[in-house]
Image 1 (cartoon, rainbow, N blue to C red):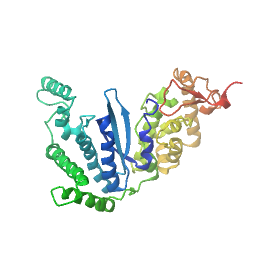
Image 2 (image 1 turned 90 degrees about the vertical axis):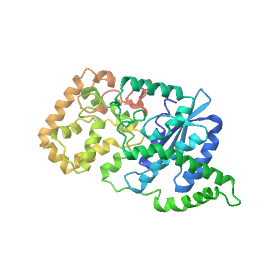
Image 3 (image 1 turned 135 degrees about the vertical axis):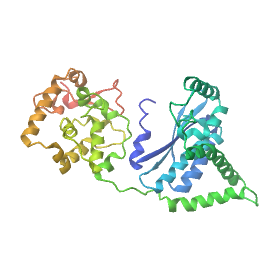
Image 4 (image 1 turned 90 degrees about the horizontal axis):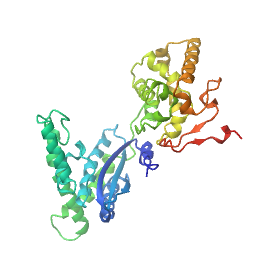
Length: 367
């Protein structure tokens, strides 16, 4: 399970947005839930719902139903409404929400009726005792203070409406003859299938700057940060580490100016490719850094001659070699060639950076 934890985000590049509903279902209701979701959402929108499940000791299964989209396009934002639909469908089949954040606000009453009801009630009471004026976590599920009108409507109306919609759809599947209130369910099946693909084409993609296109699939998992040698020198999320460079690249692509300090952060990259190797969504990070450095706006912000640039890189390599954390990280001394790939042993980090499993490239072993 641990080594499988990044599998769901590997599909993110095909989105690049991932809309996810997380619920817990009894094992014997999984097949009914899956059948309903596939025959509704997947059938309506021509965009198959991907489902990941983890079996729990309680005879239940944690379900993550994933819908790929590109929510940078206005029409794909309609898919956001399908997330509470999937949660309500799970509740209809005997499940309950996995979390209790804003997305699950309408389903809080259902959660109170589930086996987790006592826990939620205890948390609610504790919140009232510790924060009687409702100043902390305003607009969260446990604090009604500060909720805007739209959120209040979402909380009050969405769950009953979704429940009725799902009930009609389910009854409409079973009652194919005669005229009754469930005829509306059959009408909903046909209407959704006709309207969704036309209004929200599943392959619709936003047009992006080349750098933003590369970085749009980032899963924010921090894998790259954990295996970068510069993280040992600058600290996690430091000025010159992969995540900071990626965010700087996005700002540059968005037309913003960057500082010389931010530009210098790209020069300390060792190009060891550890970050690219561990990325679960296959972002070519070092190639992206090369694109940034080739950008005229980057060169303007850097403001260094070739001689000054070389002097800076030489000084940084000295700092890297003298860092007390560098040797434990790389397990070998840095050679004078000043290339991370030249330092004795080349460590290959598998995806997800489980440090209990490190692989040494055969060509660098001592025979």
